[in-house]
Length: 284
Image (tube, rainbow, N blue to C red; front, top):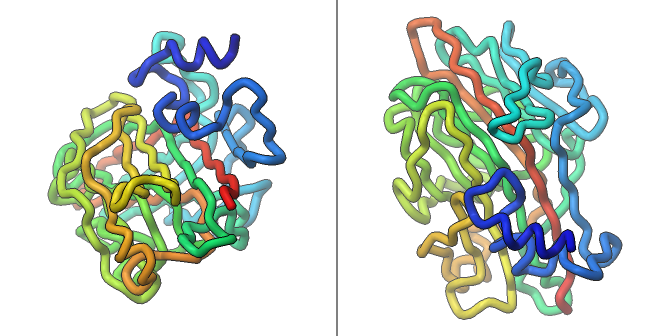
């Protein structure tokens, strides 16, 4: 019955997207978390995080005055039950970042090598109070452990850190704050854009962002991006993934959310995440 309810919810509902979690073998009848490892956090017990300190499964970086904690408010009409809040980002280039794995632990790898191939999936439900240009930029996806550090996003632009770190997922930039781009990058490399303006964010409105890597997928469609449970048309080619020179192939990765306030007018623009999830299982 839980499987039926999950499928019936459709794409836009509050919950995990069926096109990701059900279609790829997670959360279905007979689901075995020892065979299909899966992590989900609704942030019901989220503490007030201290910067550059491991607390439970998380590690954060916060500029002075930036807070990362459980949100005090809950809106029943939007299905909220535990919400992560990044707030106090009221100075130019204030940033607040959070990652799963306490700053050291990688959970998944995207690896096309025979014997190492796994389905990897991740998703979140998030929103921002403003999507006006030069307000809060963000990046969500999987990244290398210890991503959460000063200048995790570049000052003034909100781009992924110029020095290069492993990452696959979504980002917005300060200059085009409502445009959500799909991107990837490898350590010491440049950001590669899969799709410019793949989706449009709306102020104070929840959006679900997710990805699936399935090494059994059709040629050049093995890495899929989803917005609000709907698959986007663009992917990364098999050749790019296999080469591993521009794409983080065979790299330990974990969930990351990075945010940067690009507003020079000292106005706070909070970022909220209702939940996030990640899962992986071997197919060889």
